[in-house]
Image (cartoon, rainbow, N blue to C red):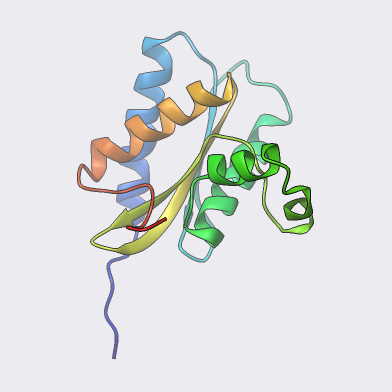
Length: 142
């Protein structure tokens, strides 16, 4: 039997706190979505003032990273590089989604929406690193 670590609700709550702290520090209004390794929603945090579409975008960024075990930016870069056929895949190719990979195992993913995509990713990275300081956002060789 294969054993692997899992993302807990407590982990997700800690990531939400750290992500919100990063957003508040920068005066950003964002949504944070945290999904497990099957792309099932574990937690969603919507700050006051975000636009109506931001929750769905955050979830889709996280789903992209959970299902592919790659950052959503990887898919954005590929589409921008001309691989438009990737648009047929169930991914949102927009920066701001990160897989949470610990000891080579994908525990889930986080997606953020509300500010510029690189700022969304900054919030996501702060949230992940606060709880999983040894996490990787890509697998070796990706």
